[in-house]
Image (cartoon, rainbow, N blue to C red; front, side, top):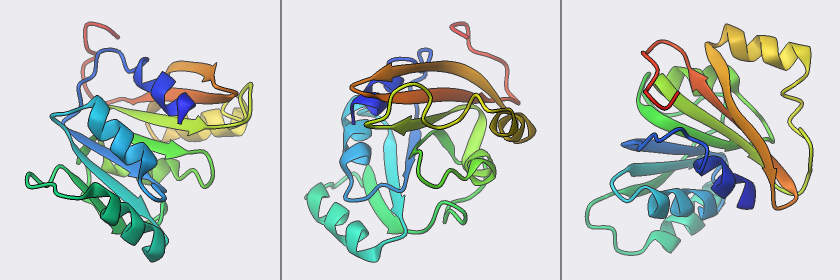
Length: 164
């Protein structure tokens, strides 16, 4: 969770309206993102129906429908194109093309990994950098925190914000 929290500090002043956490598990990251962005609608998706049920149980009373979880895998996200301002994902099964599909132009993709220092994602490797560029991403920020690391990317297609 610490690398995700650190990444949020490096979004460049973005205040997202719609947030997605891919592979949300029991909802820790999505609930954190909902607290960090109190005006945003936050969605979590996970391939395990059991983990989705546990995450839903943790939400409790949410009369505004700000936080929701649904079943789905990272390679076939159950959301429309250009829907989210921020997509966060742990580094397990990175689906760059699908994240680009659901992210609005100018939106941010946060990839984080707890427990491994110094670029565990391999994002500096030539092939991954090429995949990111082909999908329309450009590096925005990266760092380490809490024994893990994060990488923030911006999806091209919109004018950069003044803080970019």
